[in-house]
Amino acid sequence: MAYRLNRQLVLEMPARVPDGAGGFTQSWMPLGKLWARVIARTGREAAGVAGPLSRIGYKIIVRGAPAGSEARPQPEQRFREGERLYRIVAVTEDDADGRYLVCTAKEETAA
Image (cartoon, one colour):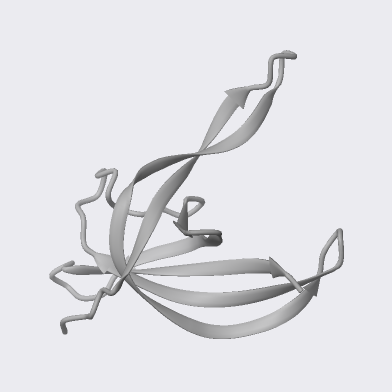
């Protein structure tokens, strides 16, 4: 099956950055841009520290990449689309040929 990959996302990985006081803060380092198809799934409201959060699940389809490649998304990384952030939960091949990868992701926004 061929997918219409019509949205450009930035793949980012977490990076620890020294805070200057002996500790670290978490930052995000871009790995590259990928074209994707983003499909909304189910959503729900959850309690957040500063108020309610809207949590929406997504299926994000990107071109396949070999294991170990920086272009292959992994859990705990995220996709960025402008101000929108999609945290990657799981990644699997779409078919036996590995032409496409299916990333299960979640987006959280303040309600």
